[in-house]
Image (cartoon, rainbow, N blue to C red; front, side, top):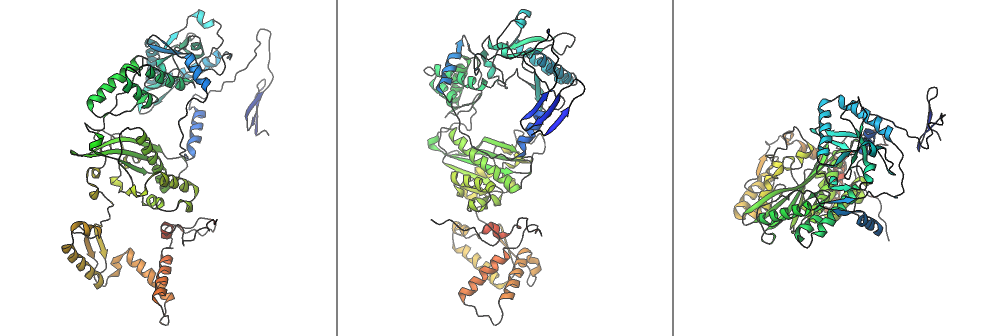
Length: 607
């Protein structure tokens, strides 16, 4: 069914919008000199790239389901055979043919479309002189590195079966105004795709137009001599070349070749060594292997100095945090050996908040799940043994959810809580204050200098360098407040006497030490008790309506009565209480203790 109809002016086409897209139709005027077998429609939105912006907004509206994906190899054996047939080593670099679905594909002539796109791009560049200079410099740099070449007039008009002009445009990072990326004719920063040359015939499927923004002349035609960033087969070919080149050097450089094959992710390598000397030698060998394929590699960094995994204890510490702006997780290694405790940053992951706002507790949960998966990635990416793993959050709501039955929550919370419970030891999840949460800096940034090298975020919280018994949330209160009842005063005196008789560790387990301060409010002044006196009043009011002078209570009845009073008091609303019956019920203390306002649960399934 048509959803919208739009009619043009005289001699202009009309368009009908359907759920499958737009249908454009009208009268075509043919002449014997101008017959075409195909038509092309070009819609240009150069000012704001509205189509790309709309797609981006739509993709960010919904919170990611955080679905874990498994790496997949080439699906069919003939794909491997095609790569082995098309990729060949020519001198000091690899050359490949593009992986066409069919070698019989014939492409239409899109020269006019590419020319109009170039004109739009030139208008954009002429509005920003600095941007224009950067783009022109990038094109000239690609000429000097022989990534592109200009076609002569004979080559331009020569008949090629697969001839296609890439629509050229550019993007830039506002944080790096001098760094531009040409989409369609440029690759990533490390130029991984540009290390693989394209077959001469397929180069003409990677044509583009350029004239240094000089609109007084016709544009020149260039071809991209190497793999392009936008070609869908480029990642597969680049990874195949990486592995193939490493396998050819496996006998001469076994350690370096294994590192390239198993420790590379796209164009970056991350590996470890037991000593600085071994790391330096590994870096040299890896560079030599990649040099044979005309490729570059990053030098592995060292977490610590010289240490052996068999004479130290390695622990992994992961902090998770969330705010209205983003969720984040950051991981640190700590090693304990004869030299003491050393801490080093391992990895971090940050994710912006979805456009459709969700509650902070849910944001905290979306940070906990990537934190767990970050641990799995770190464990798989290192050869040495990790003896223990700890998780930290400043959300008591998350800790309570992780220690409860996930089936009592709705799907959003249920799935994430269940994944954390299945893949981690819940006793290893700890509470820390916001100031002690290292991931807090990733979600509440304030200025550009916050992540300077001197920032504690790079070194981890100070308590990680202390023994476990001195870590925060160990169960020891700093100060206890109570009224001035004789029973509490006597209890305080008894505990002080017990301190003189018991050893330090036993008293610490009893939650009363010399560092614990006990503060009494003045006698006969319950108003200074604040929150707890208000709760005592609530308990008394309930009991006054149940217990009368004629009531006879046994110990069992009194116990049941106090439990009932406790449930009533803990059923008080903590949030706004709506008068609309269709709204959700208000949050109560019982939701944290029992999972619902009065502890009721759906009936279980019986076998």
